Image (cartoon, rainbow, N blue to C red; front, top):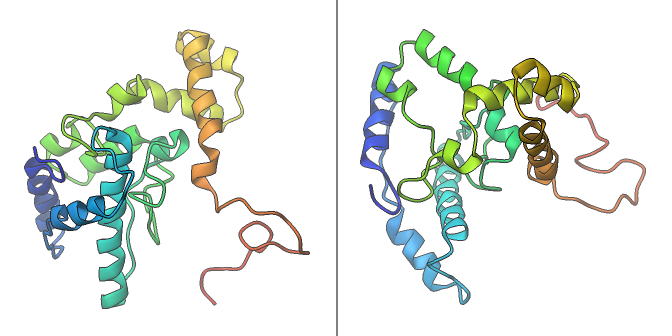
Length: 212
């Protein structure tokens, strides 16, 4: 596993692309990432999170250049579990024009993948944003997705933490921890905050359809 890519992930991506007859192009973003690092006076190679987020945002530059150049749109891969927990890079891996699976929990995405015939080794591999070697989502979040998704489902349906904990046989503290993070990360799911000065504010009051 390299700093900027994982060969196994590339292999898996190609397997899925071949199954659905999708065209692929592999680009090593390492040279661009290294060049960007050198231009940042305060860059700290020891800060894994900031460095990892920079990698996700560098990849986003490439995706949007291709979309712009070829008159295409960027398709996102974020799911509901990641989105509710704010487990993504702001303006990085979540940046997309459409996100087909964003309203499906991680465990639902895995079931859908099995139904669609995605290879077992891909479906069952430990989820990871791959911002640095050895990173796994469940280890960072401190909870298994099977449990997390049930808690999030309860929160989505306005259940109280005590009720969720009782029905799932979990400690109330764990449910509270998930709820706290869900609410704390709302800023990552919204347009930038602004001061409301006019009758209708862009990003908040307008409800204009995407297509006319």
